[in-house]
Length: 335
Image (cartoon, rainbow, N blue to C red; front, side):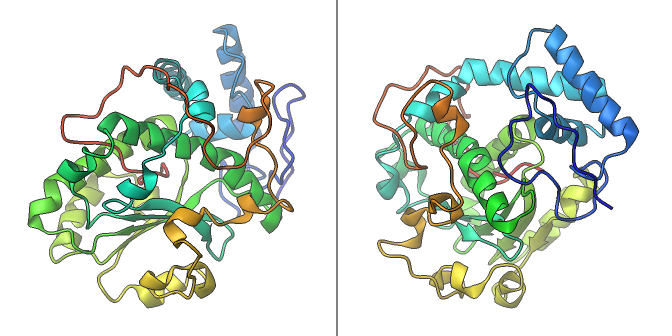
């Protein structure tokens, strides 16, 4: 039986449910006394190191789960994440980044959040078959694509997931991701895999425990064989979240995503005005469930919606994708 988490008076300022929907060891509402003590131990050690942000219980548990509740490993992961956030300028970026070229970039590489699955989680969609790096780099840069990736991660954490949690009445911390591999032939493989590799590094290192389910649809011939080899290097829990499907993916995908929430091109019935890819439709746009994100309030700024803020020069970043590569948002979801 679930137990409500013991909220820390300083850090746990939640205005949405904090109990996981399913009984899973180490998840909020289903922790042992030893795991609760490890949360306390991790937070205390980080406070002693001078950290004051992102020390809430849900965050501590995500880092601990990512490191099998090894406190020292979780501490190291958290410190590396905070170092990266500072170097990358994440806190400033999420408030100021304006991805004005998004409609043009999406002609080659659509990547977007769109409504929810049957568990109430945000659905994230990527289409990799149209990627043309040469054409895309005439519109944007690898650095700006990576900055957009990070901004969308931040908006996933707040306001998207809190809004979905309020609507569902239970804590939702992960996404349902769909990666469409249609059109990904041999000539595109190096570019596409480069994107996936870059995104995986960011999600696993800095946004842990965000992957709920991942559907790889329209997987080309031979992909399943390659993935079967890759699985040997992945955590079994992560492997269990990944579903590799060919062109006959619709029955399984529609078993997870309501037809009315899935764009028509994937077998659903949704046809948002102006395109599903650019709509950002979901509970996070509904005033009944959405609240201004804390990152907007923390600086005393006027609350905003999930749309990007006014143009501003983003902070300089010391992290660049390898030449000819940029980040995708998938693996976008962390494991």
